[in-house]
Length: 81
Image (cartoon, rainbow, N blue to C red; front, side, top):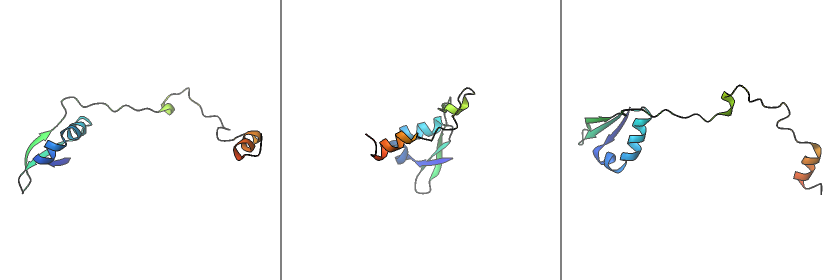
């Protein structure tokens, strides 16, 4: 649970709302004693999107993925023209 003063809430409202949308509860406090006065919670939390190729069953990394042929290695090292 996050906590923010009223001043912080005024200056960082967008960031605090984004945190609430991600499912985090944000408590707003008041005064020197930081007395809790309100809470930001999302009405409908945003689902986090996953961009991952490896979740697909048809994706396969070849065994020689990180190997370069000798001619390519020479080209990258400046030996071949």
